Image (cartoon, rainbow, N blue to C red; front, side, top):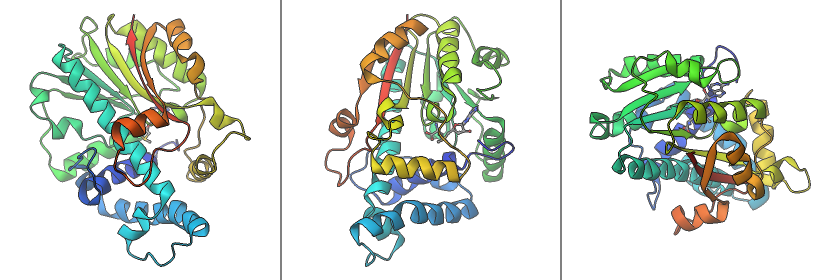
Length: 307
Ligand SMILES: C[S@@+](CC[C@H](N)C(=O)[O-])C[C@H]1O[C@@H](n2cnc3c(N)ncnc32)[C@H](O)[C@@H]1O
């Protein structure tokens, strides 16, 4: 991430949720607050970027230059629709799994790299019982807090904001700064769209911190890019484009990814039991039935439990 600048990808993925909520079908996840949370000038910038990045590239491949409206240009771009499918299915996976954990008595939810997440404002009924901690890079969090104040949204009593740079500070230290965080109660953690941007050592250290700070039975859902994406002969063309684009906007991928075939062992060495690992095909089967395009290659969702 660029220092002193809110994450542009956080706003772009929120835009994708907003777009899906307003125009897309079938509906996988309804983030009806995302549109307002992104300031208008950022929305315009994101539209330009997405069209430039995804659509023109697809047009070269698929000759869809007849599609002229923004809506047509988005829906006819396979790579953009795959990116939207990734973003909405991971949001749905997170909140489905969280609801299950909540039914089983979890009372704390930590959103790592929360970006423009709107959960705390969309689900007031859950925040009557659930303490929510949004943890994010100071620049992104500052931007979000400013936007929330601008919008005048009421701050839920159980929502807490904690800034952290995962590359500079331990998650444990950051959580300990909040007097509301209770190390004795089972906690649900989500970490989506963040691990690929961090050096592998910081990803592993943060996983270790979660296993250290949270009681046995706490759980974590996260996404990762598989190691094939880092082998040039195996990298899919769409992912290659995405990696180049992320470097261009100053949010390059830093991680080495995980290998699905030894993820369980790797997580076990960090203090977790792998509960499930969804491949792109699994994600399509669970969430993307009936949609024209699927999930992009190399993208996995996983759920692990602290042991
Ligand atoms: C692609 S966004 C994902 C946001 C959100 N999880 C979502 O799915 O909508 C990446 C997020 O990671 C955060 N991030 C990137 N590098 C970070 C770092 N070194 N420390 C803390 N957060 C970081 C950014 O601030 C941003 O909110």
